[in-house]
Image (cartoon, rainbow, N blue to C red; front, side):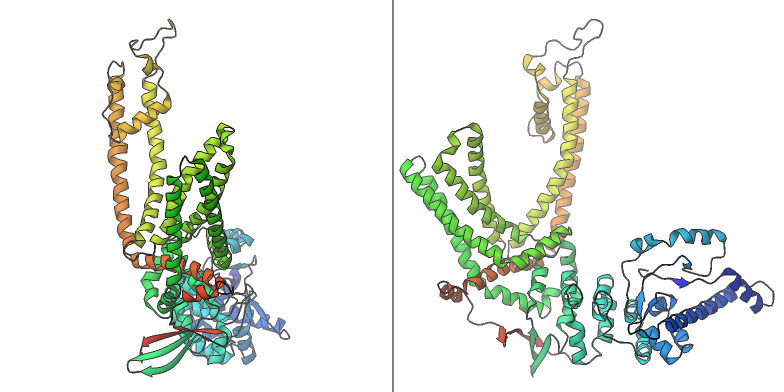
Length: 629
């Protein structure tokens, strides 16, 4: 179990002595042995707690090393009750409120059931400082955290009676709500039940303190849940009445609700950057069909719908006009200079607007960069196409600047670079257009599917190239002449043409690729008039079986399975694609509303009606939900 469990060690001679007294000198059976062991464990734990209490009677924030009592909070409710019965009121309050310290000492082990000396020797090697680093991922300094991990609901009244403090925080500033979010990553169902048993049972003010509390990293429980893409806890916290959710009034079978979304934009940012595994968890929970996420996403898309269409028209018009002008004036020196100047000016304006978009989405890009550093690749990388648009505007400026200065005429390197920039300019322009194809409801998700197919194809290409190079080297080696060391004469067929003798390895790779793909029939010069033609044909058949038949069909089968799997999540793929695009445009739109000259145009792109209401600097999302008793 992912919880560090450490017990005070009981000497073996003490156990043997108690067993001898209990059994009147006879050998104990298994049930008696376990009973004696549990009794010794209970007594030693009580003494351990009493000793820790006596050492810290004057401390404001008492601590205790993790022991069997804390393990029992998660897994053995009866043991906890037995321990507390043997403690007085102050000692019981101490163990219920003291912070738990994770510390391994050399004289501690997991169980009292091992009597062999080999276990004691091994124990000294196991329980070292490396144990902490290689141990479990979950550890709680709050006693309630252990109870929540084990789902021991029956212990909650007992701990409250002992004076447990729900506002208790650990050394990192995390309270019980943060701990429950941690548990949700491991067991969402249990975390949900414990959230309802602990958080929901408190009054509104206590809920606010727990859920709005910032740990030392400046994160609330909601921030951690959205940061780790835990849909169950994100939904549960946002639906906590009195903190984020406020019922307005009932209307027949519906209820009008308000959700406080002030400063919670990062929740949508994190959702739009979900990985494939996280997106599947979203779909299992049906996050996009639940409030307030459903209405929140729809409102975000609707609020910038006109702005996205406006930006798409501007981009397509600029691309079309640029291509037409360049194609019409090709070769006309005077007109070409005019087009160069116009292209540089227009691209500079577009580049400036794109850089403003990057600046306004700096918080979003920070989240993206943080996830990329951790290896969490977004399932739909919609922003990748945005960078192609920026690159297109930048390359147009570079390309036409070089064209006006005629620098490409000075040497072959600049000429080659000029042609490369010209070709890449066309590629990046058309890829940039794909940024808007993701908005199409019927075809938008296929762009992401194509990205995944390219990833699979790239992997297969690398593997296939290794096999291809091996067969190409085989064919190339078979065509090399063989000389006798004694006579230094060529014992291969000397009638081979000059072209065949001078064939390079790269040519062999090229022809092997054509043969393996069955694009051309085997050339006569590959097999005829060849001393090793039989061996060459044998390798050719092996090449066909491995590359043409096996690998190609395997690639098709994997792609087919992958497409079916991805299409099962096509609605969610389209949702996060559109969400990412509209977030980018909306933030840019908000900036342009701050300038007097652009403010009227920016406000024209706003929808006339919105379900997000601003009241005294706070944002509230209005939803209409089905009444639940």
